Length: 87
Image 1 (cartoon, rainbow, N blue to C red):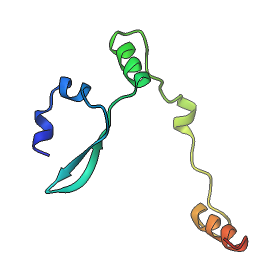
Image 2: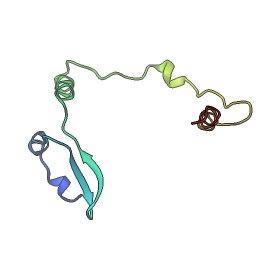
Image 3: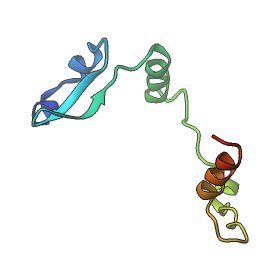
Image 4: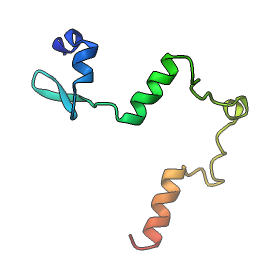
């Protein structure tokens, strides 16, 4: 992890494939190079020619659906459905 802070932008641009980040030899993350589309998007944002999308206010105010009347969570309901189908 210490060496990660020493990487420069040029080092990051030179990445051609995913590189594991380790902590005491144990993988904890991946550094993944940007694809051409991601790179172009970042360039357009930096140049002020593209504004990233924001979450519309209506979606921010949205509340989760209520639980089932029997109190089961969606995950529990899905497990029940799969079991009833014999999966």
